[in-house]
Image 1 (spheres, one colour):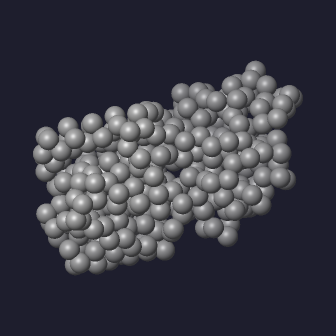
Image 2 (tube, helix red, strand yellow):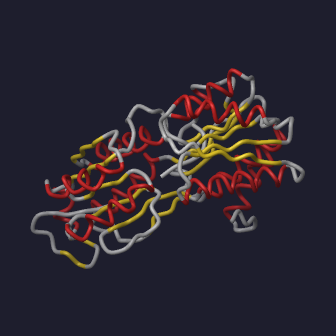
Image 3 (spheres, helix red, strand yellow):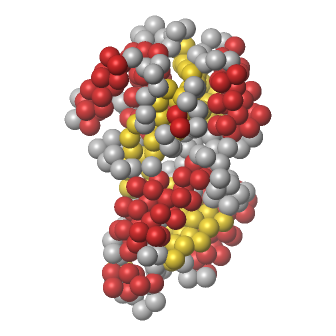
Length: 321
């Protein structure tokens, strides 16, 4: 759950390379995809979403896929390069922290397409896939601001990567739209997976008056939600409809659906159309980015307001940036 996080490729034997594209017929039969995860594939957060996204796309598109989990940042370049050497057509670094690692290896494997989830620098044989974090953060912030009894919200991230910063800024802006006199406290734990640190950060914000917490790490989100539940406060979920696991705690979720996004992206790859550019999914593409289920703690009027806000964001009538 919580706040937020992270950040594509192709090759085929005897394929005709044209810029960043490859001939579709060869790709359709030979596409092999690998994803390198910074955490575990069972974290019920970012890593699990990425793993399940590639697994789903592989089944739907008939691709061969492989994965590595819990790969520390110093080991990421070699993990990426190993898949490229073994003939994987698309190699995905799952998280913005992979941007530098991909930059180190991409030039050595020009026939491989690399994808950085939540990356920032596309080009050549490197694509980035991400979401409009500010837009969903804004909607979550608005809902949180309306539900908050103290007028204080909390946001918790791991590293100050661009998209997690964007998510927090969107959350704060939406919160202030709902509560002009409100305030959002922000904490950075510098750890994606430490449950104890996630819980400590949440308890610290709660002690300062925050009563709706939005955590955006990986496995550490569980700790934040545990702290929120223990104190009887409310939280925002992330990546999936988290109310299913936290029915008394989560009031709404920002769903960054890796299944929908990666199915679309890898569909492009299978057709030989994947380019070295940014693929950003927002509220206008609900198969990839949408909100979840409301808790009974959110009044019907607030739900209606949020629906109207989503339509205004899609129409460009609300500037979330």
